[in-house]
Length: 269
Ligand SMILES: [Mg+2]
Image (cartoon, rainbow, N blue to C red; front, side, top):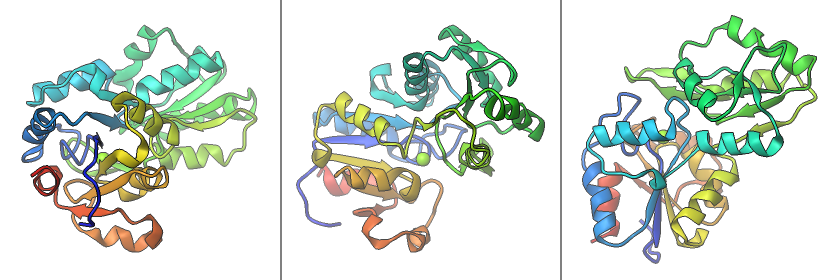
């Protein structure tokens, strides 16, 4: 640990930090740590690239697992993706993410359609995605100038069985390489917009915020560039710090620790 002023707010990734994977079982001490933050008067919010749950559903699942959260604690790629589409005037969407989210998008006023009719192709985590599904994006991107909306670009994630699965970042790289005429946008981490929304939510400047994640590449590099203190926890995607060897030293996190509760023990005492 380096010596620095205690953070005035914590920005917290969900999967790998509060819960290990998509089974949504709390990691040891995670529930208690959020209660400690509340007791200490330290604002926090969850900054999530989750695309398999609606915001309401995500908070409900976390609360069902033992947390005590309200919707205003969540800044997520799903809500910001809807905002981006509305601002861009896109209502007809080819949704290539998790099928269980279809009703959510319709409820938000979007028409889910195919690649011959859509204005935007949207990617989220989808363990059922097939090559046939991806082929639907070809007329949209090559012929229609549809936008490519990547709710995030994580290259892999851990499914409910804890297995690594290729994520939207892999499909985004393939579809982006088609060089269609529409915009290509990344909504969630590592795009700066979601970090800026989270800072607004907790009401502190970047230099006063601590960002905690199990993914130093996809989540913490941007946080560090924005001026936040960064903490890499070994409770999710990586069980050791070997991944840092693939990063430039300037981008290394300020703190490496076993998990959220250890971080709390070291910084809140
Ligand atoms: Mg994570």
